[in-house]
Image (cartoon, rainbow, N blue to C red; front, side, top):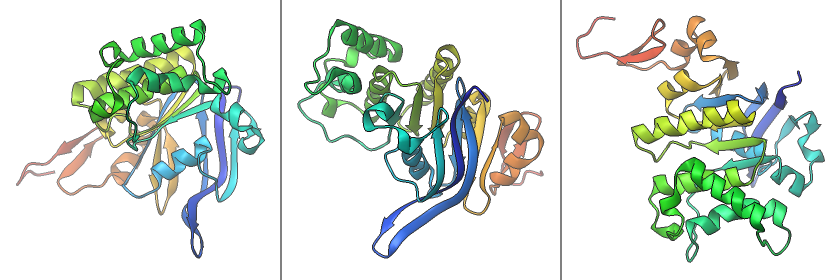
Length: 266
């Protein structure tokens, strides 16, 4: 499997507690391919953010294996991993007295050495990231003055400036209005296809994920991970079983959920 970027085998994720370890999910097995946009879906609290942090190396796994381009994740040094995988989380950075461009420039830290001085090539890469997200008008703004949606775009530009073949994003469309959500998802898919990058993101925007993702990971406390293309999961009935909701039904032909009006017959 030459295009395998990330592989997990019998992975258990969680975090330490006073009594030992809190296991959130176990026996997870799946593959993420290069050049694809993969969307992680699941209920709140199921462990999506924990999985993202674990895959990126920010959080240790409890058990199992994570391979990155055929190598165990623990074989990477900190610098090697920061040049291989970047991550954008939902946490709001507590930053003042820094412009948006300064924050984006931090994406070059894995390449600039101790003093973090950018050369002309680094500056050009930052300019390219700013242009990709169309946020030239935000560059000179202080980070603390940005709206949630503006800050999210700046953080994505930062990870683009990091130039990693793998990008993880935790709910990248959470703070965006609908047109911006569509634009962002189309951009991320374009980035995966055109650059061969591995884009893996969690989202609650189910219908956008169904229409644009190459692969879906459905995460459930009882069933673990179910993986497939949107079309596969639509045709075999997995989606309607996974997203059971009173007042809505899944239309297999359209591949969308439809809200039932009061008194409507299924």
